[in-house]
Structure formats: structure tokens, C-alpha cells
Length: 309
Image (cartoon, rainbow, N blue to C red; front, side, top):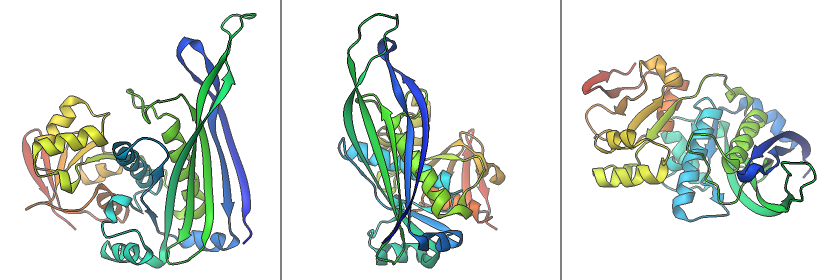
């Protein structure tokens, strides 16, 4: 099995406490089988399989999975099936059945298996004044690797690995919303994998951001609030309280392409007439197909119904 290899690199700098800094950024390597070049222009759906991370516990894994799924939706212009939708399993047969149930063609789909590992190393500090002696500092390298397969085929047709450097024990996202090294590595790997292996899905459209309450946590306000605190710690207290106290499962933070449906920031979304197991990815796919799904919209205490067409 012979792979082509491409190497991409972006260098930058990240400031840390006490004015200590180190060289950082993203460095990426892409491996590609020749068959992938022929297949790539035909791909219309990317399936994100459940990811693995080399740190933390179940809470961290669920939060990073949610963030990675959001990144995959954005990178594909909405043409993604996310791991949270694979409720019956992640084997080829289960994934193919899920795709057909969602109206997608398994023959034109790739699967992305994402794993993130980390390793620490010592780097020399930078003296704020010339001549001062400084020690070494610990930094952490996050390695995000995506293995790409054509659904139903046994062999991996390509892989993307991206490395980003950050501080020890930093969260994936800062309080101001800036992404730290773990998410920088994941986002960069996803963007490069989509561009190389599913180029027709690359879209310049401004991505939407929609908060989703998992179906299993949607029964009570207490369950909703606990799930939101776990999956979306960046939300304001007002945003958490608004969605926790609502009967709807979705909150629009950034309308993006959803503005074509008349949606605005702060809208609560649901399905007219009852609960649904649909995900935020299902809404993004409908908009990407040019469809107008039926939605119940709660805005400023008023309730509106958007008819499907």
C-alpha cells in the first residue's frame, strides 16, 4: 500500500504567564492512497465516528466530541453525519443503515476516525531582559490524527495528522472563546481532511452555531442544566437558564446560513407538535440541501411555526 505524503506547517507564538513564550502553531502531514484522488470529487457526506482522546474522563470526552462534531459540520458546509447520530453502532453495517435512514447515500460517504494523543516536553524559556538566565518550561503537544475510509471498504485510503502546542492542563477553549491547542489540532486536521478527501464539501459560507440538548437529558430542567454545563461550559448563565427552562432542544447562538430560514441569535428551536430525536447536524444537512424544514421557533416569549417546503 503506497501513500503520497504532504507536509503543511504554520508557525506562530503563544504567550504564557510571566511573559514566557514558546514556538507553537500547527504542523500537518497528509498521507493519501492514489485511489483517494479518484474518489474524492464524488464524496457528498462525511461521517464522524466517535473519537478517542488521551486525557481526562467521560465528561471531557463528551465535551471534546461535541466540539469536534461542531467543527465537522462547519468544515463540510453542513454535509456531515456526526457521531452523536450513530445510536445503533459504528460498524459499517450500522453506519450505512443510519445514513440511509437520514437520506444519505452510503456509497458516496467517507468515515473520519479521529484520535487525539498528547505528550509533554521541556523548552527553554525566553528572558524578558537580555542576559537574564531562565529555566525550562513544560509544554504539551496535541497530536490529532484522522484515518479516512470509504464506507464499506476495508482499507484506510488516507490519514491526516496535525500537531499543536499548548500549556499543560489548559481547557480546549478559553473563556473568551479562543480555541486552545487541543481544538486547534482537531480543527486543523478536520479542515485539511475535508479539503483533501471531500473537496466538493468545502464551503466559504459562514457557519452557524447551535446548542443542542441531548435527547436523554431533555426530560427535566435539572437534567438539561447538568448536560449544558457539561457540554457547553462557555454558555452564559442566561443562555443556560433559557434553554434549561424551555421545552425545546436547540438554541441558536450564531445564525450563519440558518439566517436563510429567518432564524436569529437567541431563537429556541423545536419541531411542531412534539419531541424529536433529530440533531443539530440534521438541521444543517437540510439547509445544505436547500430544504426548509418544519420548525417551531420561540422568540421573545412568542411562538412561531415555520412550515416545511
